[in-house]
Length: 189
Image (cartoon, rainbow, N blue to C red; front, side, top):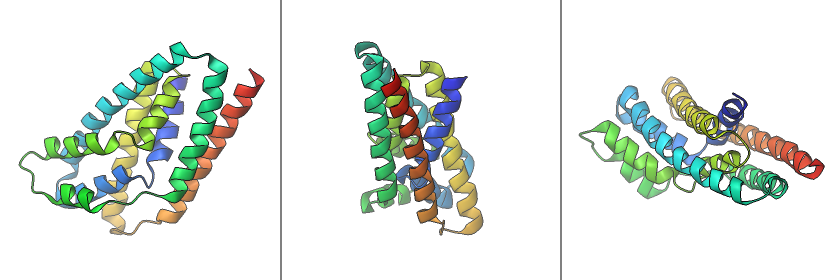
């Protein structure tokens, strides 16, 4: 349960203002929210299953103390990355604008490719080195889907303008706080 809660919280915060959240909003303005969320959920589940597997291998191969300190440094990097912000590229916009016969497949494919190597995937790898694998996978997947669902709902209610700067700063503070906790844990171990 701890792995689920920690992963849910970290990934939810990481997803706020992320490129994939912006893509979810773009897809939801074009397609019904249900199929968009199904595609997001399937893609996220696959990417995070891979991330957890990588984290499990790393966690088994490297002693806990160095992993914890590296994880803390990774979360500082995620915080800086979040402050810098993500923007949809022209290629991302084109993929989101293409007509799709099968919305779930189109959204899932684009989301899968967009999520590879992004900060939520790397955060999931990091969490899986220290936390329970199933709880990390489930928490990270649910956290990302809930954040994307929130973007869809809020985006549809407020239009396309979200307070992006405030969201980025809040998410970065969350990463820095988690980094501090891990650093204290790693040094004390």
